[in-house]
Amino acid sequence: MRIGILGLGRIGAFHAETLSGLDVVESLVVTDPFADAAKAAAERFGAEVVDSPEALLAAGVDGIVVAAATDAHPALILAGVEAGIPVFCEKPVAKTMSEGVEVLKAVQGKDVPIQIGYNRRFDTGFVNARAAVQSGELGTLHTVRSTTLDPAPPPAAYIAASGGIFRDCSVHDFDIIRWVTGREVTEVYAVGGNRGADFIKEAGDADTTGAILTLDDGTIAVVSNSRHNARGYDVRMEIHGFTDSIAVGLEDKLPLRSVEPGVTFPAGTPHDFFMDRFTEAYRAELTAFTEVVAGTRPSPCTIEDALEAGWIADACTLSLHEHRPVTIEEVRQA
Image 1 (cartoon, one colour):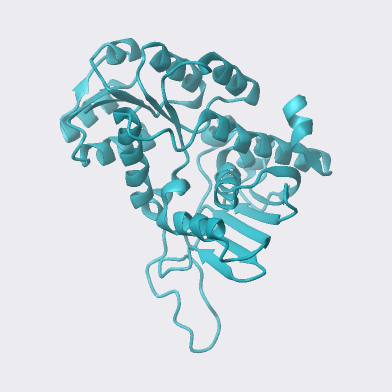
Image 2 (tube, rainbow, N blue to C red):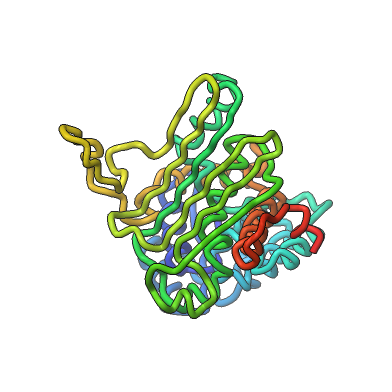
């Protein structure tokens, strides 16, 4: 299998490394506006370098991985589909929901699979949690708690173009809550503040947020996010039912310190980066994409899935700014 990669920044280079380690991938074709990034990938992974997306699509690739800047996502997705080449694209589909909806409309009816990158769907803990919910072993759910805490803020330029913490960070929690529970979010109430990093406040964004999500069966989901968690990269989920309760992320690399006497858990070196926490999930995600390319499985995360998480993020952003509950239908119809 021959895979093309468009964009060789931090995540694109990481995907190149992962793909180069998959037995089914025989060769890589890469392109990036920065020639040095493409050259480095060629030297490290034996990739073929081309000078444009058009040249990459014409290079006989079986599938493409879009890891370029968000603004480029819509055009690259559509170019792949028009060329009849299966597409994997990092989230989000587009910078705004209206653009994302236009992409969805443009690809509907096309027989070309598209997979959007939400890696937690491939993490073993979250997979097991979904299976526990689907089996009914937890009983009726009443509470879900989902947490994403970054060890430090990203650069100011990234924050300014990110779309805000709910669309950039919390959206992973929103997607995995939908996926694990199998339910839709109907209403949100969000709060946030700024506890550090003045450039985040100056960008009109919050660095620490909380959101209450009401699911369509009455389950309450609590989402907690921050850009400031010096102990490490903390991603967890708790799922509480009337019969049993389970947790994802309670393992020795959990970046949390117990102050209970005699307790040594967690005993490992804390996760310090998302690529460390989700290395195996990324591998499973891209393995799944090669199966999508081969036609042996449908897309495990569609554009429709990604847009649903985006609507939740937009509702939380509006709720934060207007200090009130917001329904998903309100933002969907705006």
